[in-house]
Image: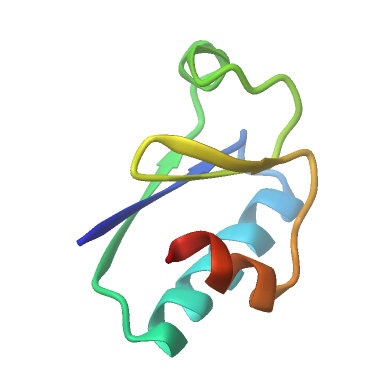
Length: 77
């Protein structure tokens, strides 16, 4: 099971990234769980300085933008 982590304070872009990540995982047939990390100190522990960010299994894949759904699918593999 993949652990998809959305790092961000809950802004509209963070919400959009969470929606796209769920859709990408579902379309790829991946078993997953989504965790939203809103605590700024925890976000900084990932080394992320700009949000939103997407981490998969604890590894940051993208920060500071909302990628296209096709790009997210590649990040989940």
